[in-house]
Image (cartoon, rainbow, N blue to C red; front, side):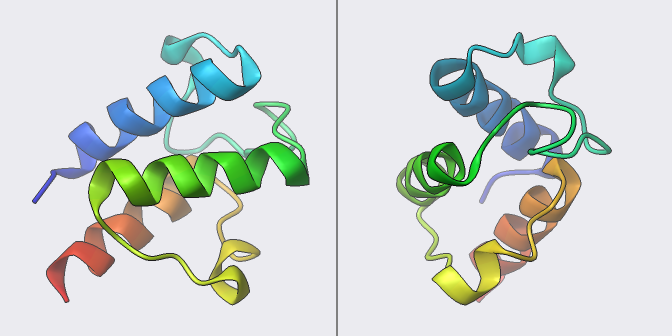
Length: 82
């Protein structure tokens, strides 16, 4: 099970690959759409990559609640504990 820091680092790598955002810019308080320029199509790619990397399932209904990197990290952290 990954720690929050490992999850954020993993998300940073994913966002870097998909949106070209430097990994050091991906922080807990950053909004995917407003700060990291991740549009809805790219967000789907981020979610799929995160599901594969962390071994969790993120239902479509929950994706809309993942506004910030912190939201996603918390969600993945909780999903790993199930």
